[in-house]
Length: 501
Ligand code: FAD
Image (cartoon, rainbow, N blue to C red; front, side, top):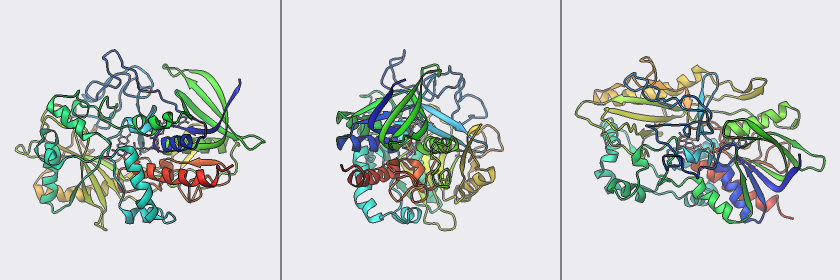
């Protein structure tokens, strides 16, 4: 087959990839983006592009026969998950031995399925995790650039205090305050002006219509509406969808050669393709980039990769849990899917935790306060690639560190409010803490270890990593603003130093 070539290729179309594509395009460099998922721009039979969490169909998950939502049960009933037919749906759940990882699939990557929380990490903790990065420059230039480009906005506090849609958050705030804990508003890329119109009945409901992990039809500024739209607008960027890059090698003239498989909507491989480029940017996410590098080393095509490729992985300490409220503490049948507040106990050096107040929008009063806790779990794991594909040596004992930290915080909240945990949410009554899945896979190609201080892969020239695999396992808050800002920093440097004629 003919080899298609472009000056630059970007693998994936999530945060890191989208930043790379835009900045390359703006620099006048013709760039090809290869994304394994589909472009989400065509309405299904119901007139909508995405399905909601209450009625998931084939669009929900990546080639599944049944959905695998984070909450397995409700009142111990298997009412959450539904049978679906296999299709390149927008949310994937990748299973390793003791950890499963949720990721987005499609043009926009995780931005299509995530909760929109756009949080800048504490400067001191960023400095601790990235000792070689100039933090003043990050907080002065790249974080503000990322927030502006992503369209970050904040909820109107007066509306927040009055709307039924955030009663669940106000109840959890009260319980945190009763415990002497600090809460903080969390910025978002969901358009709060749109959300207020949803509440007023003048706009079609999305966040207020149970849409989130299987995509939002309205309101959310996902990457296809921000970075990627601008990238396409440069006229230099092209996106190929439904193509998974399977291997990287280097030709004799120093150019990169990629092999890719194009699949159809049934998942069948319909074509094997070859690409070549001068500059190669990896933005497949923590899992995608780690897999591609390790697979290429295993097959002998990238033998000079640093030994630390695959290492430094962590789930950002994620633990989900629910508390049972008293009957008088109603959380409301109507809940927005977009979280806007966190309990910030990160300064507690004995047990640093940042817990976002999560919605559970079922349309019925359920008295549940749900949380996604981000704990400062220091445990790390390593990816490897073999005959069984990608594996991860994360253990149950390592997860127990996360849930142990979450338990310490929420035992305090329960004791101050005379409440208990909910036992009906995660499949079996003995599971109160869901510490075996993550929304925040981080690491595998850590900045300054597997790469230089700017994401250039050690051992090779003109090969870059721009995604969540650069972050060493934990960042203390939801990660996409950090991933975006680090990618902006890499692109600013690379375009000046590496691509000059
Ligand atoms: P990704 O966004 O994961 O993008 C990688 C892309 O590359 C994907 O589209 C994938 O299909 C593609 N790809 C991978 N391998 C290949 C290959 N070999 N060939 C071609 N394409 C490939 N973070 C926050 O900050 N705030 C939140 O509120 C939040 N909520 C979340 C809720 C959910 C349900 C999930 C799943 C995640 C959430 N996150 C949140 C996490 C956030 O979405 C991720 O951290 C972020 O998307 C990671 O960005 P990335 O650039 O590393 O890669």
